[in-house]
Length: 68
Image 1 (spheres, one colour):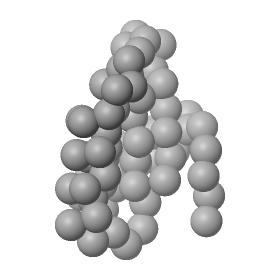
Image 2 (cartoon, rainbow, N blue to C red):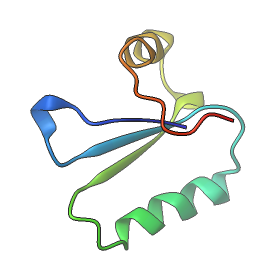
Image 3 (cartoon, rainbow, N blue to C red):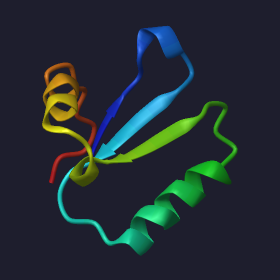
Image 4 (cartoon, rainbow, N blue to C red):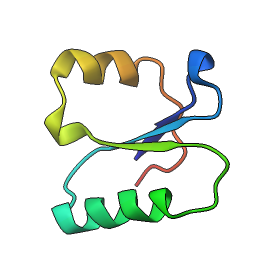
């Protein structure tokens, strides 16, 4: 899982899930963030469904919070 806060979107957090994840678990994760009381919007992106160019761009400027 990776996360970034982009300068031009202060207050938003983007979390990219890398590796195998069940669709049910991904939906639950998104729902938990939607229903949370966090004071910002959280985007959850499944990196299994994005272009290689997008992955390279994000991974070159990433902040790793959790690495397993």
